Picture 1 (cartoon, rainbow, N blue to C red):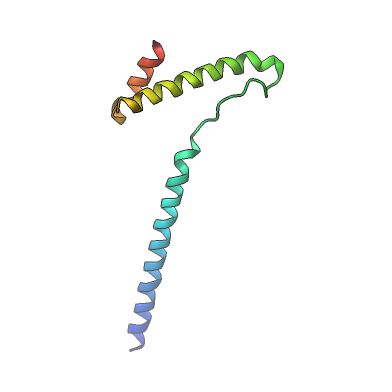
Picture 2: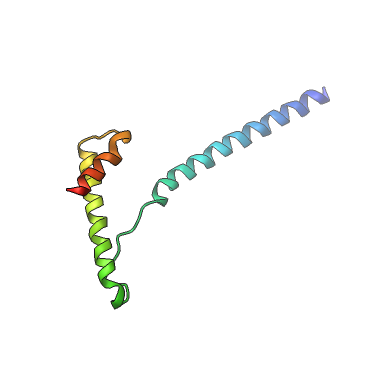
Length: 91
C-alpha cells in the first residue's frame, strides 16, 4: 500500500514538472520572437560625428522593413524569403 502511494505522488510530481516546463518553453518562444527585433536608429540621438552613419543605417533599416513587408504581402514562403528580400534590396 505504501509503495503505491509513493509511486502515485512521484507520477503527479513528474506530470506537474512536465506541464510547467512546457508552459515555460511556450513563454520563452513567445518572447524570443521579439528578441531579435531591431529598433530603428534615431540619428538625432547619436553624437554629431556619428549622425551620417546613423542616417545611412536608418535608411537601410527602412528599406529592409519595406522589402519584408512586400514579402509578407506577396505571401512568400519562408524558404524563399531571404532571396526575395535580397533581390528587393538590390533594386
